[in-house]
Length: 424
Image 1: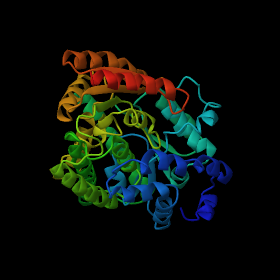
Image 2: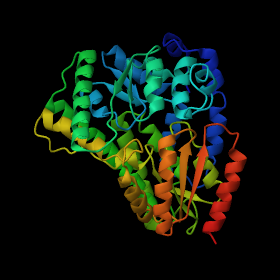
Image 3: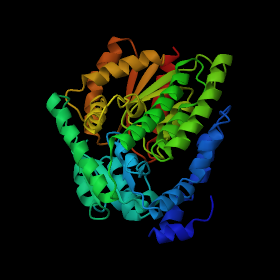
Image 4: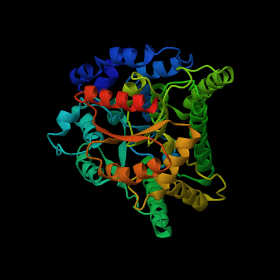
């Protein structure tokens, strides 16, 4: 990575803590990613992105701000990034998948809270995430009680705009979400000083739909046995989808897909045919949370699908492009959200259908139901999901964990036993 100390200093970051946070990353990344056998050549770009994750991309965003463009950050797939882009801004995800900032967060938040929420706040308190520091404001949403209250605290440190996501999928709920999207549009217009019209919103919808489409294309290559790419690499790409410039991300993932599709034609995989194929379903895995994939893929399995917000829930639902005017386009943005089967909704039986469908599409041998500690909604949905999977004869286990390494040995033992059971 280049020398970005002056930029980080001007952003107000804590350089000493930032160095401490980043110090183990190169070695960890080499062990988890670079040392994988038979990696696709096109992964070199994503390795480069990670090597510059706090440098070059942040520098691009700093320059965007100098040109008068908004930088808006968020944590959730429900936030309509199309509106930010339509106003000439940049939409980025925020760091929320590391153990390092959690002790700082626990000084102001309860310990028995989801690690994703604690890490999100902790990164800001520690001043070690340049994306926080470069952002004009954060967009939160009401997908869980922990987040709702965390936004109040976060707002003390950075302007935090909250979108009220309905908890049911009725017509009234869609109207509520549509009203929230209109309110958000007006907020962005006010902050940016620019008008979002039908033309620039149509272009933004088309662009983000292309990003989602190329992710679907990437996932499609994993439906064959042997899988042409590791689950770890695909998880990394999905995580980077929230950070990278959309046009460049689409180009690079397209190049990767072409290589993977050639591998599929030649029957080449990163593992041998017959390797136990695993789908992970449950809570998201924000950057840099790679623990569960690494444990599975170093225990003799291969992850071929993630039914999560850092997986299919991000890209399967497209925004309809047929809107003839601004009102219809905003309604289409609301419509997409109502098709995302997050555990925040009640009832949420469509998620059961998704899990069963994906298990068949990706020819999985077993499902690992993963939930972060203290994530009550996903934890409680395990009962229905596991019952449906067992009825279809698909083995499933539940794993609850956090971002620390304290349970790595125990998890590895359970995962190895599950994989051995799948192999008979």
